[in-house]
Structure formats: C-alpha cells, structure tokens
Image (cartoon, rainbow, N blue to C red; front, side, top):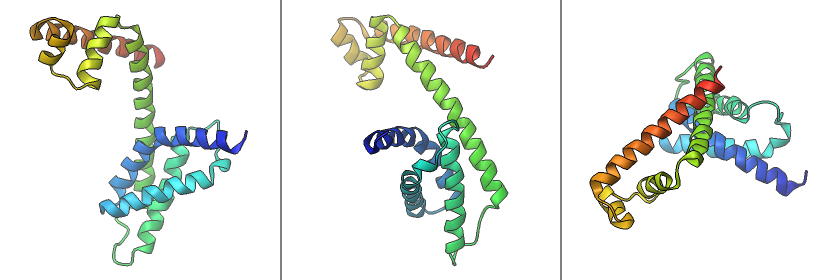
Length: 174
C-alpha cells in the first residue's frame, strides 16, 4: 500500500472516530481551547503512528486509548490544574464513548440502507426538508402540493424510516 492509500484510509478512519475522540477530550478537559489543542495533537499523533494500528481492531478504540494518554499527559504538564479525573475514570469514559460510537455507526449504516429503500418521492421530500432545510410550505410549492399534504407525507416517510432502522438494528443485534 502506498503513502497516498494509507493517507486516504487514515483520513476515513479519523473522520469516523473524531466525534468520539472530541467528545471524550471535551468531557475530560475543562477549557475549550485546551481541549481543542489536545484533539489536534491526538490527530497528528494518530497520523504519525498509523503504521502501528492493527487493522483487525476498531480504530475508534485505538484512538480513544491514545486520547486517554494525551489527556493524562495534559493534566500532568499543567502545574496550575490538578488532575481532575482518575486514570480509572478516564478509562471508563473512553470505554463508554467507544461503545456509543459503535452504536452510532450501526444506526448510520441502517439509516443509509433504509433511505435507499424509500420510494423516490419520499426520499425527495426528506432531502428537501433535511438536506435543503426547506419548510413544508416551500416544499409544497416546489412539488405542487399543499403544506398540509407535505407534512403528512413527511410524517409517513419518517415513520417508515424509523421502523426500517429499528428492524435492521434488531436483526444485527441477534
């Protein structure tokens, strides 16, 4: 695998793991700018050490393991700020966030599959509402309908989508 391929794979993994890493760091470090700096240092270190990552393990778990170390290092270097959380508590927080991140990715995959299964008209209405951030009145004007009808159709589409997602998640968790 060449460097460009490695960089592309790392970027994809980081984009998926970054919300969990940021949540962990921002929950662990009080100051916004300090937390932001630590997240950036974690991203740089993950990129530098990407060759050490074992592809069979979840990337988010590896990233959170490294994040825990960087948070501990942050507090050790802060003379004015004592370590607010114990190492054990930071570890439990990282484990919880990793579990939640896994659940979110399963939900996202289910959502994407279920969106593909929707009838084209329902998908278009949802796209107009949530991607285009259009109001029911604006959508009604665009599709030649009434805003009341659009609201009913959006409710039906959301209900169908929610049901599909719940069925998919239930099948995966068997």
